[in-house]
Length: 290
Image 1: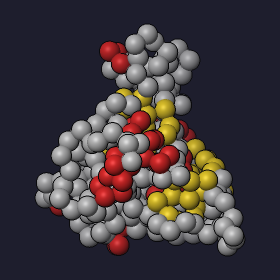
Image 2: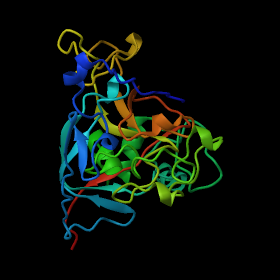
Image 3: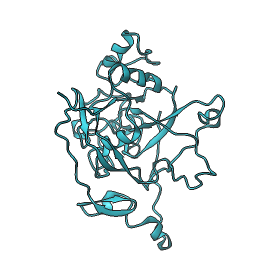
Image 4: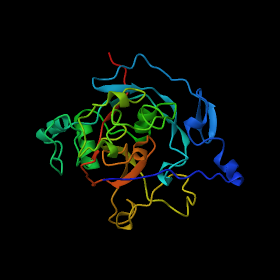
């Protein structure tokens, strides 16, 4: 499932300067500022909650504002807006074959729709969104919203990749240029950690979220300000007879080029879609541990 995407070229026509603003990404601002809504603004302070200790295998993402989306790239990434999340926990690594198998053996999850690799530490793949939900419920967790996923991946400084602004390399992520014939064991790229300690939020396998999006309504949103997406007409939306629910996937995979593992790239897929390049990780509501 190679879902390629490139950046929309910047229009240097001076007549469009007011529309573009003074920046479209962090690297166009000074070190202590970030690009938000096309303006270079002070980098927000990182909130902290020392009393919230995450369960084993998870990290704590503090409550607060962050930058969601991008004004550069494909339409689905736009517009860049200010987002907010409460405190939450999220898995450090993608759900593995070994972990998912426990749910299958307990009769709570369906088996994957394609053969899995021999290494039990590989991320489980060929899982529909409903099965990902079933596993997270089995584990006492839930799927992350796409807002939670993106904040965990890029932090509050709106970074382009989980590790920062540097282009991907094979020490940080598993993507098309790494000559991988499939995903690699979850958590194997320490250099690619995100701001809170998650791994593989760039490349390896795409990841399901719990966020659904209806088909783009051209009359209600002619400029695509809600960053919607128009799925194929045979599975247009849940509002039409016979339609299938569509959910956001994030993160890119081993099949994708460098620009497709950016923290803002998003696609909408039917809930029953499966691929050897698509897996998931779980999240949980943050609670003060005794």
